[in-house]
Length: 431
RNA sequence: GCCGGCGUAGCUCAGCCUGGUAGAGCAGCGGGCUGUUAACCCGUUGGUCGGUGGUUCAAAUCCACCCGCCGGCGCCA
Image 1: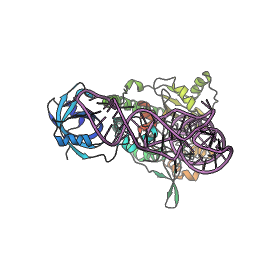
Image 2 (image 1 turned 120 degrees about the horizontal axis):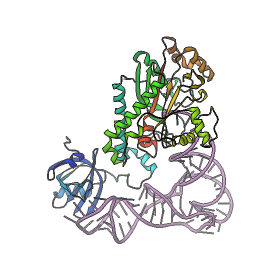
Image 3 (image 1 turned 60 degrees about the vertical axis):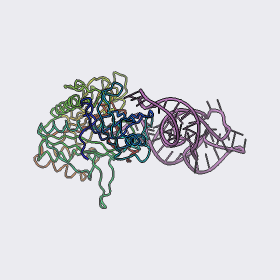
């Protein structure tokens, strides 16, 4: 069974030409001896008119009996008709049922959120979900292309690990042949090892967080684009983030224009055009204090603070130089002010919050050991990581970007799980 | 983990405050319709009211505990 025409081809066909489409019946409207079918495939939806007397009697009977989401093959004539959505419809001569729906299709207009998530395996047929997944694919492709074109090597790192990156208790425990293992929450440490062979690396793979975060911007499993670069200092990595994020947004604005229409969205490259505003933690604190927010130096910004801050900007913006107490042990300290890190978070505007986190890493052996101790962590847990600083250690920097966070922001999705085919949240591991 | 909301027909919800043993729309089923777009019109089926215990002559309704889901916080991408 070779599929010669897709729905999108049908819209481009000459009026009067005969074509054969294969797809699924999205909806059906009966008018006695006239039946309208909306035929869906991966490229779009077209109205099919099945008229008694025009199509053969067996085909009309088939159209009468099939349930929604049945797979059918329809042969007919392309007609322009302003009454059909898109201005084109297929006048059916012959309709064959390839795979009938055995029961009524559960997804209908008006069903609720929980029902859709419980039936995600069926819901993903909807044109909107399809559009988001196509955009997601393009977004990842653009990022990979840019990184490859700029000399970065894609590496794949393990998912099973033995020690936390952050030192927190946010990892999923896994039984590993009688030993304790965890699911990775970042491949950063492995990338830091890899730069000594490959210098510029990136990974695009899932990260796992065992936090019971019940918010519209958290997943327990998300796709993490991580980049690590030898010799790079904070300034260098911020430039990379700026160009990469802009490239991704600009690429979508051009490559996904038609698909975005399905969602009623438009992405303009100007919304992410560099340079991005840069705010030091202490400056951000000043802005917040001026707005009447009670927050002391040293405290991390909460979601409320981030939201207030992000309303000050139209474009993504960096917040840098956090107090070392608010960040993980591996962050390089600012030589001009050792109370703060050489770190940079990129926050999306309009309250969408953090989409990138990164900065310069400690490359000095003694300083790293000291920082691990200061954080009350066990040096044994970070043995091989510390070992990297023993042999030809050099300054290096990196960052992580949340793919779903970025889609959530760019598509203004109501919840980050809409950016996933099968989202994983604290309450959901099925389907 | 903390705070708030919700759980009633296959689906979406009303009823709960003010206790008297359950209702609408959609879907389904039967019939009609040659221009619909969530088609429409007529008829019709469908429920251990999340669970357990308590108060009461009587509980979907009041009380307690538990479970599930949704959102906010903390945490982060």
